Length: 266
Image 1 (cartoon, rainbow, N blue to C red):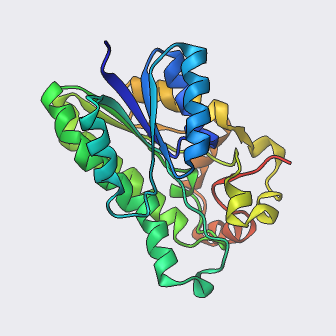
Image 2: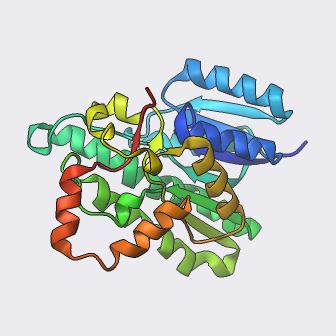
């Protein structure tokens, strides 16, 4: 029995679910994790039946400090060898920074930042033992973009995640481990509706909208190839290149007009 698995956080919908499909299509067994157990159950059955791979799941909330350890122990108890780790879980806050409780901000930082570090840290030693491992950090073009007028912590956390991914590569490439920061632009998922910022997302021009399927496909290919960075689509590759040379005053103006992340298709 093949005990090699890919583990995907935030796998119940959007980019995470599409990543699950991409990896299953390539023959990977899967462990899906997210908060909604009923949706995980449906997704695992559907993917397993479609691609004829083993799919298991564990419902977990990564805003809980114990969640990474719980997920790791579940994999160990079931003999799952995690060779691909996809850190994809998202978190949105619908209120302005000054209106949001510190508790909510800490959850935001934990899911988007600390949990990524914790999941990577806890699964990394086993990868080192085997001399092989692929890690994906689903980041955002917000890491390169002007500050957001909606979520001022989002871009800084994504910048930090990119640098963290770089650090993993510098320290562990020679041990057979690679980390890929996948930085999509505006992606059609339910994230923005759930976060209460759908109106802001509606300002995004059509040519800047990406499908979750495309983001997942390009991200998976880059991760399995061991590339350090993936910016899906030529549009966003060009945008990131241009942003390096745009004056800060213009960047700040852009930041007031557009918000980073993903939004829901109407």
